[in-house]
Length: 167
Image (cartoon, rainbow, N blue to C red; front, side, top):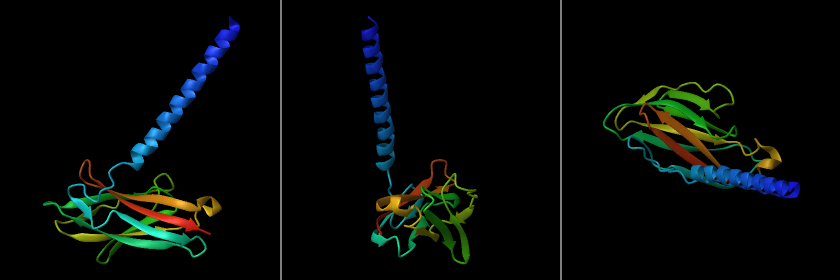
């Protein structure tokens, strides 16, 4: 009888572990497949994605500038900018105003930016990616996201960068 209890307990534990893996990986897929469109109804970007292609870790940091625009009929305040990884930073630029760089949430203090864009007003987000930040473990295909939160309750914009990091 005890033998059957041990087998049943082992099977139950294996099922729990498998269920945990399925749940964990389904969360990752939901985030990966989330809407990365450049529109949230008000804050838009000409492009929401940039691929650096193959870049060398030894060559140092690379950067790309995304143009953003308030396409709505009312003013909009960008409240927070942050990245998905410590290897990626973003700087807000509007005319002579330059704020940042802003990094990853949880790795230092991320201040509120509180920059207003009037209807049809444009700004830029300069994104800098450091391919050497993770050392040799960072080789290969990489995806990072810069998040812009705004004064709309559900308002945010995601800017995605990709790279294939080589030595």
